Length: 288
Ligand code: 13P
Image 1 (tube, protein in one colour):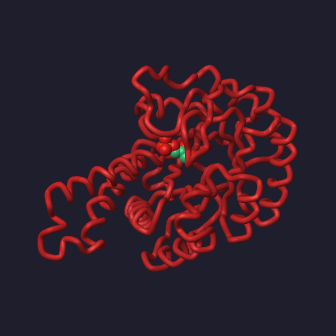
Image 2 (tube, helix red, strand yellow):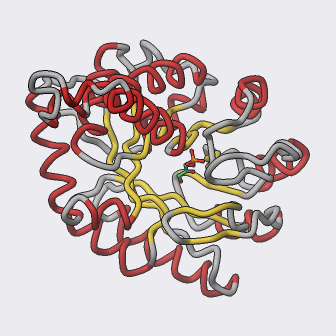
């Protein structure tokens, strides 16, 4: 039984100077690929689940059912948190009820006072159940499941107040965006990151939009207090590319190549490669 809150794994990562990957899951293949890889590399992990992905997978309860059953099936011993990604106010309560072990309440689109009040309330409800909480200030740019963020840079005073609600991890916009980075992207704003780290009283920080950020910037962010890095798009891109290759090579037309267990295998293997690469870059291998 290794399904736990994200709190302890993040505090350990923060103290020892490495990052924990949040790998977003989209279906059965994703969960299998991530769980078997983290077990192989003895790394903690956070499974990110957006509200859209939860709906696709048949709801929050089904997500928890799949994770618990696969955790047992593969004898997973490393800590695994199941985390609601960019949760709405209503979604946060539903995921909490379904047994999620970590919740992100993304109130960044509310007027600040409302974000603060709702974050406070959700922190109390989650902590009463031993569930960790992530909050956000300053919308992360790009599109995530239909939610389009403008990529604002976070306001330090707002960061201070939200972090003071007792959240276990904190996400701030520092120029990062979801999805693929445009060629003219300016890079992460390390001055803002430094300021956010200081005003949030050293709470573990979260870097969203982890796909496609150059390795040296990721390493630098980790040295500056980032303890959780979210990755989704890169896994989706390699899954699609591997599946495309299989079909373009007409492998689905050979023998029983049309069997979904064969058809989806190259994609599932490609996800494992990305997860291995990220765990190594973030420094969480053998940290379970
Ligand atoms: P990417 O899809 O850009 O990797 O971002 C993932 C993320 O931040 C999920 O919250």
